[in-house]
Length: 473
Picture 1 (cartoon, helix red, strand yellow):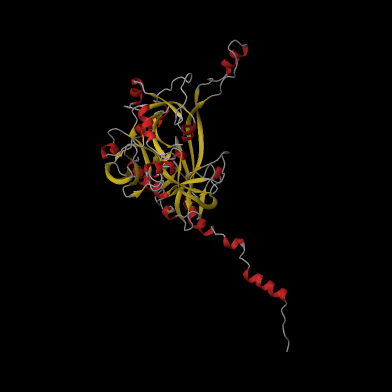
Picture 2: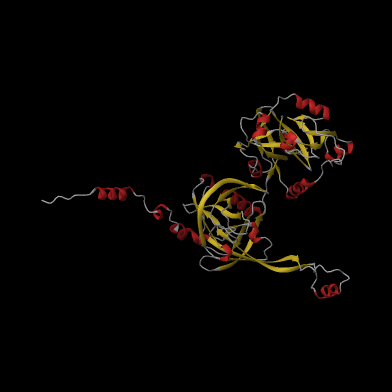
């Protein structure tokens, strides 16, 4: 009878084989089934349209130079505008079997002719049902039936780190598939107050705009819209519009060709740790109201500058950027309960939401550049006082220009005032929501607080108001 012997080396080799991890390829997800089943709902969009732009400028030649007359005579319409044909490429996806397609508004902006190419190479001319510049969503329609429509998922169920897939036409390469993970949710981007973007590291490039972002169940959870780039190409930061936001816009566009949004007439800013300490909030949260439109919905409801809005219509306002989205999604004319924080206690008020007008919003954006008190000449300015600033009383003309009844003008800053971010030319309107009527009264108000305390200064800067946290040294 033979005995089988296993050496110590053999035993170790066997153990290594048993406990060795699976190959890396076996751990990665397989996207093939998702693409095969749902890739046919993705379309390529090309547009043509006439746009106006400048012609080549004349060289920098003096008028008395003989070459000046040569360039003037033989340069076609020098420096003047001219019309030229523009072409653009983008992506989209079918949402109904009878030809409704979602894409980005910037893909079809100023388009005179839109061509949609399906995955089976059929081409159709499309018409724009409506577009919304604020969310960058557009709804277009082709004359076809029996089309493969995408299924919608729930973006609220997305988790950071979850795998997602993009299909589109980057640089015109149709039906390109890229994959990555969800990097973050609820991102706010500059000038984009109405979209809580989904951030991913999925490779997205020019031409991917308007294409779908799929979860691993083959459901569309977003529309690829923007990238952050210093080169014009993908750098690992891409942003998608959540599909629930896009679908709400699409339904409004389909029903009436336009989008209506709510407004309550407040200007807000984020609540920092310093400001939350100054207002006695348990933690930094909510949207700090730094000005209220006179006669607007918030004013009628009793909301005041210095209030912190914690909840709107039963939904939490975690970040200040949450409030414009919640208010904008509320039907104009409806009443909403608003929870505010005032004088270190919470209370509720009822506000009737009005309709946001595009022209009024545009005026509001443009008004931020002026309207402030003009600072006096720097020469001969007195040295800053005990709080790191020197102050002047407002003249009658300045109060009229700023439309304020009181306040003090910051003439010079250093030390604590400079560290807090105060600037020469700022107008201090209030200290912890107590109106400032003179420089002497300002010093009295500030003198009530202990050293190291953070107070909230309401400041008018340019045409806007904001709260500045000030730590007393």
